[in-house]
Length: 225
Image 1 (cartoon, rainbow, N blue to C red):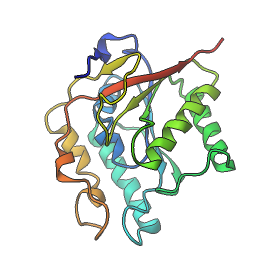
Image 2 (image 1 turned 90 degrees about the horizontal axis):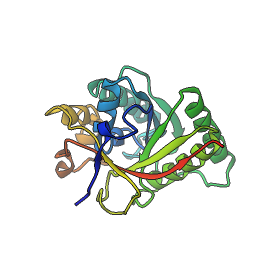
Image 3 (image 1 turned 90 degrees about the vertical axis):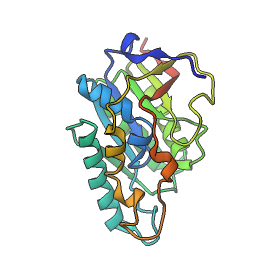
Image 4 (image 1 turned 180 degrees about the vertical axis):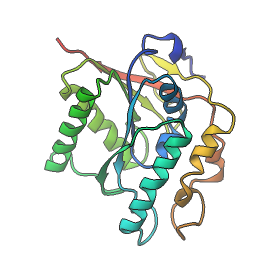
């Protein structure tokens, strides 16, 4: 069992949060409660998606990528977010290498976003998550936080692994979401939850039964000296 402090009663209650999601639907599956809580309080600095999502279905391509952007926008609105998300456009399931120009460019862009939006806390998928895009975004976030020249705390959330998997120096739990809100947001991703786009990836029905809260593990903090 995870022993967690309430986010609302922690020193991060007044932080400006940036939520990083590897794919459109991860924002709801892993961080939906955090998104809803911080958006309602005016403390959400934005949501950033790493991949274009075009590989979730055979032959998906640009049409699927555009569809998934629209689905993400609808899911965000259902979570109470009015701002436009940021899409980094990485190829789905084929992350760039850490020594590549594309990787370095992404780190610089994310660091600049953290500075310009005055971000105090970043939430990203955990490094041990099985999907390569989830692990890649955690590594990118770590590098961007170090490069941002701003005091920023880095938290991890889980999508496909146990929230209690790894011990953290500090663990926070969000407020509970209103009944049905998270499911309603997930259903915005029709390409991932139905046969609307034909054969391909589909979120398992068991994953539709999402908890009302999110658990966030403090990975580290960068302090400006």
